[in-house]
Length: 315
Image (tube, rainbow, N blue to C red; front, side):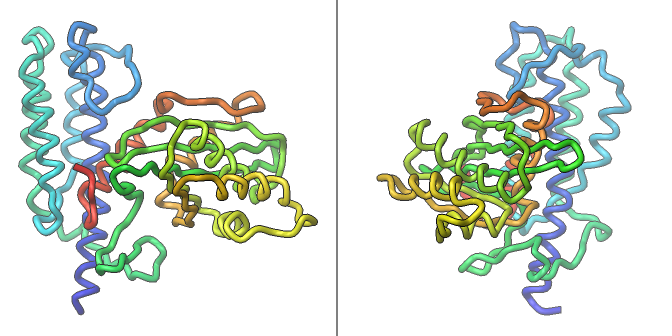
């Protein structure tokens, strides 16, 4: 197998296990949220509050499941960032009172850290570059999944959805900085329309809110290529989507740095979740200062996966 094939195999392996690592870290992070308020500084990564029980009441089998699901990350893929993050978690756990039985969490973190060296052969899969799951940059590196924007830029992922059976439509978006941090988000319930119109309104809403929020270097990512092309190139006044396209293009003429690009669906999971979440809301735009609980896990996984893949620039 050639060098490109080997690279793709390794990247695919990293993607497979990094999602497991992210899930494990998220579960551990969530468990820290249940420590009493006097220890709120220990609430790492999770952006929502939790009313669950303290760690010493957790079913030990849950920790076993976390440990068994993690796999490991190849040395060739800069796993140092994840290891550093684990070290940070471990050092902060030292201040948890003994009454909260932090020993199990410390032990689990040590196990996670020691598992970062090897990838089981069963995790290795061949991923052709033409599969749509991987993308190659100019320097030849391959990425899978959401990626950090350049430092100083904000990335907004948007998506739209339509449910014909329920006569319902919605769109959503999330703004993240160069370190993958959730800055804000939105969920917009639309009057019923087809999915293409919902996707176009998603781009328009993402642009409009970015401008109002004061972001002046913004990347809009959408998994609807037709909608991206419409907004970037424009359309005739007789087009069925002329109104949202015209409104969106007004923002392209403002004094800021903005780009709208197509990405595969795998890069856009958080926005996809928010677009579906919007269906259960009242018609209108709803600002989300923090991610809904179920969306938090996707945000956490995106950041973990982006951190261990080639081309990562977050510090």
